[in-house]
Length: 152
Image (cartoon, rainbow, N blue to C red; front, side, top):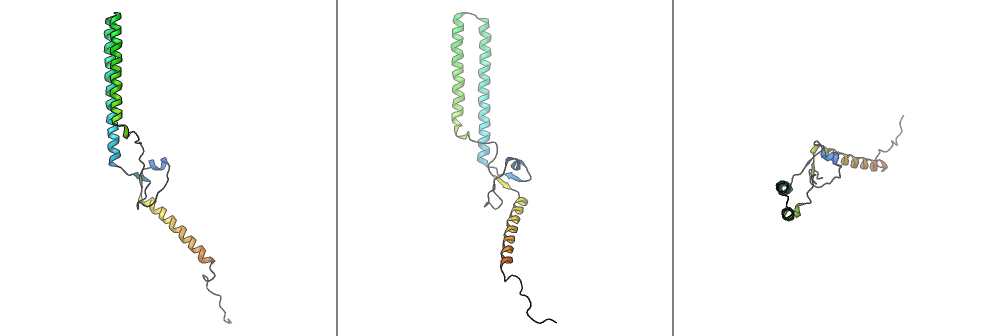
């Protein structure tokens, strides 16, 4: 997580990151484009699978109509070819987008909201002031000297 001045890092749990009042994700245009591309790829793979299943249903319907042994062998060969074609299409699509497989659902960089950052800065400042005050109290010249004159 990056603080508003981009100089400080915090390690925070997922529940705090999901709180909208605590921090906001820093959106990267490249990551968004990669996510959209991956979604389109998944849709394309799903279409190919559906086309394959539809072809299989049609072939099974034809097989039931014809029960010849030769037709069964030919249908099995056609099934193998169709399955291989489907697998090849899916592999080709996945290899084209192979570099983008490491995208995550949760953003990695967040911007801490201003009030939380200010509370953190105030806490650090108060700790420094308290430390300085402790050092002053230990110094014998900090307190005024006792009066030395005659008092009535």
